[in-house]
Image 1 (cartoon, helix red, strand yellow):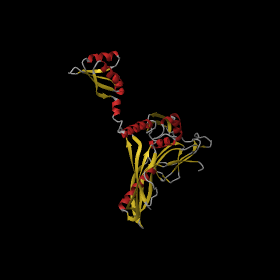
Image 2 (cartoon, one colour; image 1 turned 90 degrees about the vertical axis):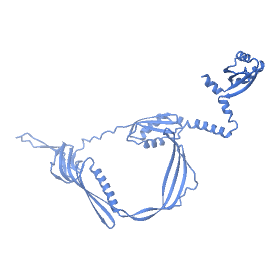
Image 3 (cartoon, one colour; image 1 turned 180 degrees about the vertical axis):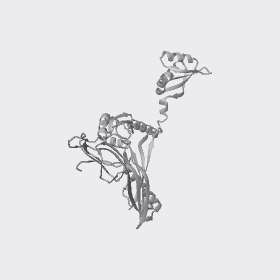
Image 4 (cartoon, one colour; image 1 turned 90 degrees about the horizontal axis):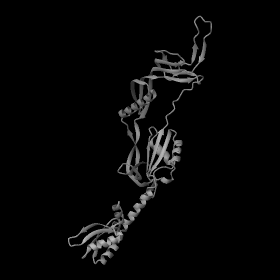
Length: 399
């Protein structure tokens, strides 16, 4: 600990020569002058180290005993800073650096979000910025509890949130709400009808009475499970059968055939770049944009805008809110070009198959067949598919 104190306080290495250098040591001890690291020289002198502020007293004590006390070197922070007393640029840079550290340490530079799965980090960071928390925000002025409550109101998919400030880093912990399963309204009565035509392959009745059997052919809108139930009567009873209405429920699977079509012209307009470009540079500091250009107008009639951003980051991987961007505007003209018919057909087939998968959902696509034709420069692709899917959908009475 004493070494650290001496380092910041500064020390002077003295060389003492004379007839009786040991008397000098006695006077220093009597005057309570602290010294250390004594080294005797071959010529009878000695070297020792004293505190920087005690060097004058040591020279005065040397004169009393007739010894010559000279400096043999300095050490510590004061001697290091004395080297820069004429280097004003370095002193200014050091002062600016210290001021920047003191000032920037009061602002938030990083926002870390953890605990989210379905809600994206970008959505949470954008909501936090609207609430006043983001890179460049003054840290001591942030109310963590209030921001947490406002974030829960801003994003309904979150059930819990905590904001913790650690210097220049804001840690945001979230927990997503578990969605409540949708339960059918039992007070609404109705039938299960077919949303697509096909041949019934399986019927599972949970509530109501089945209106079709396996192998039956049904059309869209036809009742599959009836919500009107006939209560049975005892055998040989003279009572009339009674009917009641319930909410029909169940699953009906069927073989279906779907046909989808898509078109695309084989002659399209494409971009041809003229080679004329305009570039603009801008800096982004703590969320503020600084433009390095004057005129913001673009003289190009048609152009593409390409933005490239260089962001500063620490060796540990954290990105700093300091970045440089370049916006390039490339002029172009339009010209007609012929599409490759095979490539266009492949693209349409892929998109039709994706659309079919969305319509079938959890069902199974048994077979797919494509047909293509070109009429007046327009390519038409038709998809015909056989599927195994659930076709039942609930329909309330009276609709």
